[in-house]
Length: 248
Image (cartoon, rainbow, N blue to C red; front, top):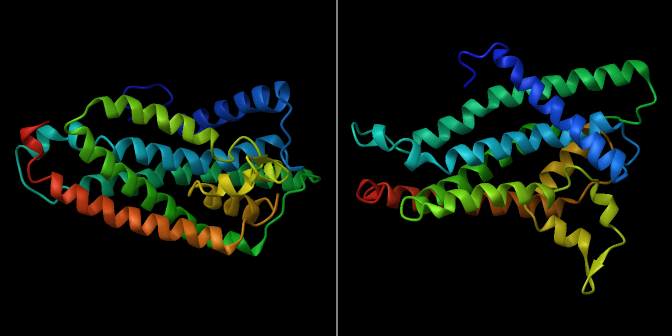
């Protein structure tokens, strides 16, 4: 990915660092959005490293048929191996960025007064990563199957992913919505209907101790949503792969 670049893999660290700085200036400085008492770099980095993995895998898997049409047309192999490989290889970048988060966490722990602390929910970390990977694979394979006929979906979906981030508590704490209502419906519940929200919030609560645990019902909801979506994505993907060369 970073062939013939001067900094090479360092971009894996530079990109989230610059993103966090931008969030600190815009959402922390200008908008003044609180971060539940957690230092802004830690709070933003926690959400960013998880979301980046999900978004990157989602964008790659959603273009599977279009980007690999040349290979698919020359030799047969299980097509599903490509989006699965994208999700697995994305763990390398995620591991580097999570390590960056861990370093910043340790620095604040040494300095003291960060307010961040572990809870036992941090043990759910492997499950949370698997769930994000499952969502990316499920959504991505469905969109990839649809874009073989309707290329407009590529542009539309990339825009939706950007909006999706703001519907997920990445740059603001979910606790801010506790007292908000929309047409009599708690905004907190509406936010949790976003299946990625319980995953991100559980990660933050586990490693930062900020806010409050969203509850097992929402986490189970996300897991069931992911499982159904993953099965649906595989079925649709396998059905489209039989004739996609006629439309790509």
